[in-house]
Length: 151
Image: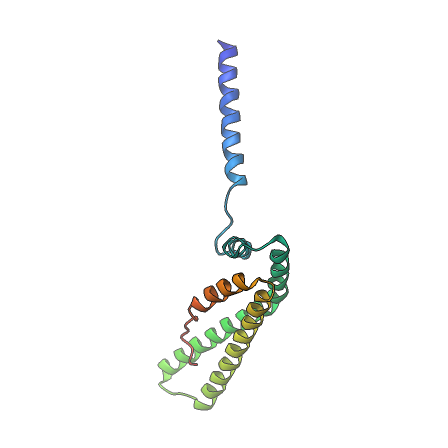
């Protein structure tokens, strides 16, 4: 009886361990993560390993710039919220300050757009004509982000 219970418990332990290990190894990454997006891009565009490596390098090289711009956009959003709260509370508007804010927002938006275009074009240059056509079709279908900030 002891031998049978031991074999049963050992089999159960091995089964549970195998189950956990299998699903950990085959777990897909977070779909919103950088790596998951690149893996999706590789599969969708049927990129070779060399193309994938070059495109990954392009994305990694542009990442600090894009993150800095995203931080500036977030800061502008916070400033706009504070400006709007002040306007609502006092019912007054400093039009000169608001004009400066709008110009700064336009500058940051332009920089974001330029940086994104540069990345898209650099990545497209690493692709075959068919891959490039498909990629640019996907990119052009993406909607522009909307914002509460005045353009």
